[in-house]
Length: 203
Image 1 (cartoon, helix red, strand yellow):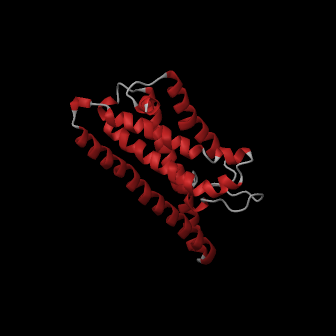
Image 2: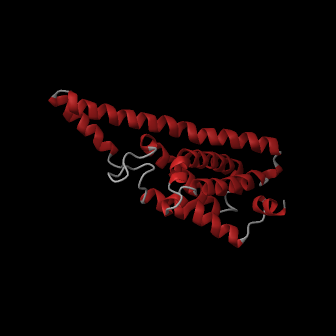
Image 3: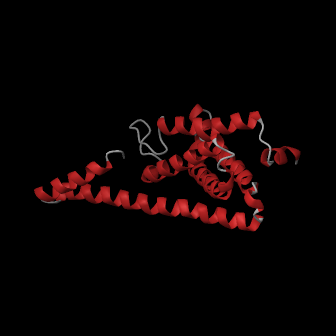
């Protein structure tokens, strides 16, 4: 009980700070860049496990890690917005856990290799975001009641995840529609579709 109380207590230790930075920021970035089979497909490994959700996952990860970096860099300045950060971090914890569960069959099959061990990273990252979410929720800006902070965290989490969901759906459908137009449309339509795709070069 003392161990878990210390993990979610209000006082952060240097060890916890280092752990959170490594497993909440550094290693997730490394895994996204060097991803061999989760979101990016390689001929050797075949189709990626979650290739259809690549753009959505990248956007969510970018938002989560951005909030995390701000929270850890400027804790006193953003303390008044702690329920907002709590909602974002709790969403991040759920998201990481879902990714880990989706990868679990492959992780168990490849546990004898390094990639199998890395498959457990989403669960560890989920724990990091859960811990920071709980601490952000327990912060007391203006001594607000816990129920108010909880509702604010839920609303802030939804405010982040819902627009991101609709935005990624819109972008993916726009890209798919433009590609289909280039393949099956007239020359003029194909040129217009190619011009529209230029807006999505970053994807």
